[in-house]
Length: 305
Ligand code: GRG
Image (cartoon, rainbow, N blue to C red):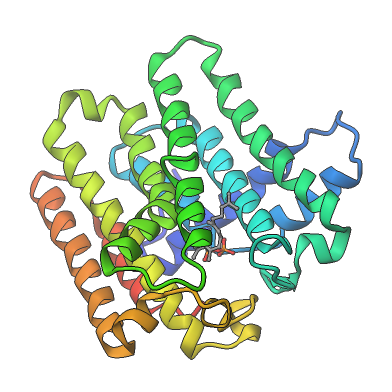
């Protein structure tokens, strides 16, 4: 019998990242399909790297719930395809007009604006095809999981947040509006990543309290992730982040740093991560192995890109 290596956070993170990186090319385009320019552009952005945090979260929570890893794979691929589509579209001249993403020229700079638009559309459609294909066996939990991701990526979630973001440009918004915007734009995909393993496990039907705790955990790390993003936008460099910095301030958009000041934004981040750790403590009391998720919260707090 092969012995399991001892747990280390970096080892486990790398294992999850390697797994999703190996799955994405064929999930997006199988070997019998013709690779035209749109597909090439979509693969360019999809395989350009990135932290893969959303699929990592799905894998980690599946492991915590002892959900077989095969069940989560189509949803992990779908969420990364949706995330990549949102980055491609967000970078377009009609949105943020960015020239660098994941350390490379953005999709429209490399391939033209119309092709980048189509590449984003292709990724979004393939995400739904990937999920719907596994729903064909009639398992209602898979249908609910696919619906949930569609909802979180849609106008009640990420697209709704992006709309608030665009409409807030050059305007003074309230602190509540800033939280609402990021709860939707960034937070909803984190919520989907955390809850889809629970939905597939029927965890939510059987244990409402724990489902609510998972929701709170995801909300804390989703907001924390965005606050950290705003802090890095001030402290980091284009070379390290692989994307433009200082863009929001230049576009007259409010961020947690411009609204609260740097130190208070750091305190807000700490508060969100403390909230995440308190929820994990409750899950641990209920017998779940939360080691990786605890370390993930710390990683999200101290990450440098
Ligand atoms: C255009 C429909 C549409 C939506 C755009 C998510 C989004 C909404 C835009 C992306 C730009 C942005 C700054 C979003 C906030 C969330 C965020 C910090 C995204 C970057 O995610 P990472 O850091 O990126 O996980 P990698 O490259 O590591 O995958």
